[in-house]
Image 1 (cartoon, rainbow, N blue to C red):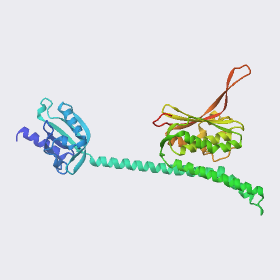
Image 2: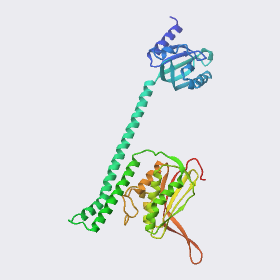
Image 3: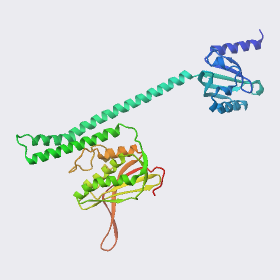
Length: 373
């Protein structure tokens, strides 16, 4: 047996034992021979085809570019492509080079491995990891909500329940006791409603947003809190254009109303609470200004966490209001924070002085595609 024939047989035998298929192509990409362990399926269909034809119609240009790179003398390694011949499809890892760089017309050799099973296993693993991650997040959210409800029971619901128990402890309930029961029940209802909103918002990963006039939402929030403010001699002043374009969900009104509610609670009687909004670049910035005691620096971040309040004296509620505002901001792709409210005044000599009075809660969300009219 001649040496050349022996090398050819040895090469074929090695290729047949290997997991890869070896393709011999002419310089135009036509498959002259396919040497592989099992010449069935896709491998049994490609002899005589041009390599480019194995790519789908929409990706045929990719096959042309690969072959052109090889013709120029480049060695390509571990390219991943999806091939098909007839009803057979496979994801392959492909390495290619000229048989003899000194003689390009000698043709092209390609080493191909079918990695369909590996890709499918990776896809299934990725899907499993996503499902497992979502399950873990669901469990974490459930545990967080359980802890939150337990905290609400300890911090907020037990007090009005104790008041009700005290009011009905005797055989006869006095008119004052009836009024106490009514207020306690209303307080419990408010707490449960607030928790329901908190649980709902923490159970979703996104909100359906629409584009429209944000000023209408601001008007609704201001209208709903104006009667509360009037009872305390507090006026809600509106400073925003009649039309302000933004991308938002109905929950945004809840966020603004919570900020206004806090401002009214913390402001002394006879003051103004200012609701303002404007477009800044690609964002819309909403601000609620009050003239209350302000938020100490040590609470400026933690105040948006549940049950953290700058001052609890005289302030009722579940401690969830600002946590809900933050969650709504996050679901809108925005953020919320608090600053000191700096006001100016003139002294008797006419000099202007600045002082910190109250807080400014700032809510920023993406504006959407249009400018304000």
